Image (tube, rainbow, N blue to C red; front, side, top):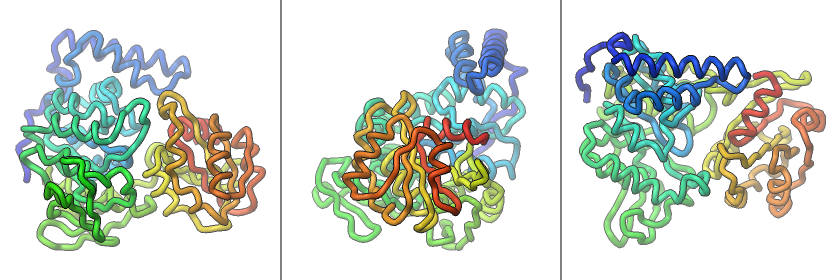
Length: 418
């Protein structure tokens, strides 16, 4: 499944209005950075789009674009795909996760010499971005509850995806093990199914097609009422290998930990194949990825080693618990509820915190008391601290696992100098 590349052209062929928008966006981003307000990618993109509302599409005209969307794993998968496609040519990507139209616009503005655009897209914006950039491929990994105050119920998101993908010319690479993703992708005429697995199943017990009860024997799933069922995958994650459509097994060797990242690599290999990059080449290049925007980094702070782990929702926390070191490894948990996190913390009650039994647990973050109540109900022993500095001093010897949601993760990174 390899289509032709678009005609190479860079920002030099943009209209005067588009060039002005790009220049103004870069200036706004520079001012933001100078003021210490982050990378400036979002404000830069907003300024540029204000001056030229069609700029995103113009910047993507010369690129073969792949969009990556999911509730969990999209930043890591975007990075893995980008590394794989660099075997075939220069890549531009929003590698730091600014995944709404403004951030994507800023990223593409720096890709005038690129051949490929590998773009992470927030779930709510997928259909609109796909309409603007006309991607060659779209990777759909999973859908689960996340930021319910902002993103709404998962079935509604799946319906938006389904409507947005109907009749799309893009090749859709979709997780065959997630019923919501399968239902969303089934409206597309070209789908490559990947058996990437799904540990979190609590958002997919009712059929997205008819509302009936889903039957889930083993790894299979189907609706006994309407017949909606798991499609036959072309690519299969099998332990430490991915099987390609010809049945050949390719080893997955990553520096990133956990089953979830093997699943991300399997999907990334399927995407790379759509662009003509063989599985062996794609997977070998993925090995170079050690961390993604601070995720999985091991840092030294107060003469202690901390591994930084991001978990934003129940599905993400479940995957993270599966990869931390066993007890008595100390664990620091940090939860905020700011705008970027979603202000509703009711999701804490869906996380299987009893899995942390036996770990010394320290709780920090803006919503540390909400989390403390949840852990108390779970019957776990823990301590509450005001800062990461205090939490580290309270931890017994050994490497510390620090798990935080989005803004809490950024707070920790700034404090520990990562």
